Length: 213
Image (cartoon, rainbow, N blue to C red; front, side):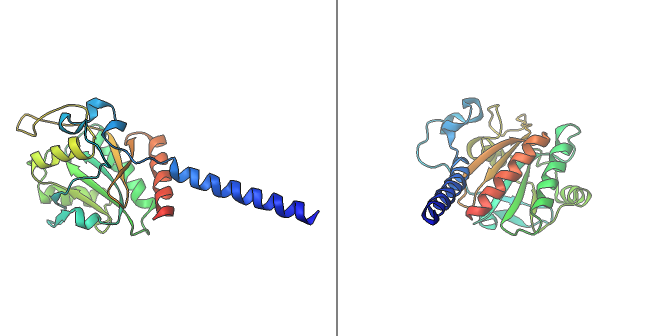
């Protein structure tokens, strides 16, 4: 009888362990082939190997230069916005704030917002926006920078936008997508930043990644 209980306990433990492993495995590593092709820049559609976010150099709400080194070993969510946006951006920023609140005490989880109108979003404009939205400077960088660089990141690294373009004067992107990046600089999920259900999903997925971190 005792032997039977031991066997049952082992089986239960094995099942729980298997489910736990499966949950982690269910969060895939995403590359160009995993996105709708219109979301992937033509230059990288046929790229092979593990995709990682390219090096970047941006300027945040405090006038500090922010690079990939500031996110090294971090799990983070990235989005593309502009401070004067009257439509989806306020909702996206509010939802980024929810993620910030959920992980406010976890130094390994950060946020990154990139302006799609960098010529208009000056450092003072970003500072005012960050203050109004309750941004924690240690956790969330609201950034501006070179337009071509930002647009190339959106199209070739984060796969956040559908339209193609050259990052020139007339080029403009507007996307609700949130991109989840893991501690190894790999994309682990894409979410609609205007959807409450999707925000719950990204929070759940971040918790999955933190368990593995």
